[in-house]
Image (cartoon, rainbow, N blue to C red; front, side):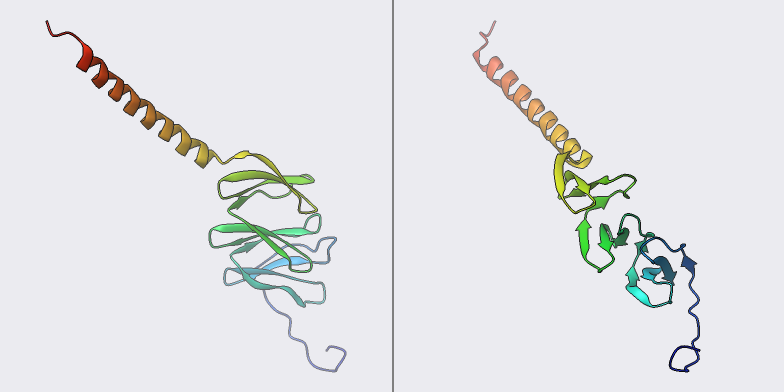
Length: 146
């Protein structure tokens, strides 16, 4: 029974992590993830395709094909790709640009996505082939006929 005398029925979750220093546990029901506190109160709605346990005040979440980090106030930062915080920084990507993300939310440019690198290499190769072909045609026009 709770403080009001109501019988409290505990929720049964399909998955659950241990509680962290942030007093949160990542839980899932029918493939949707969120967080609860030690009293069982839902602190992050179970709407995510994945939610990690909290570490350094942040939890990594996935929604469809996007990743993000959520803090204990449910403030969300979304990226195209992200890695968990193994240290005080992690690597994230938005619009094929990579950043080093710090725990306080600051982003530092670190380079371009491997996907953008691949596209630029292919475009460069196609440009080289086109220029090579154009050069060959120009040379053949000015060669004397024997």
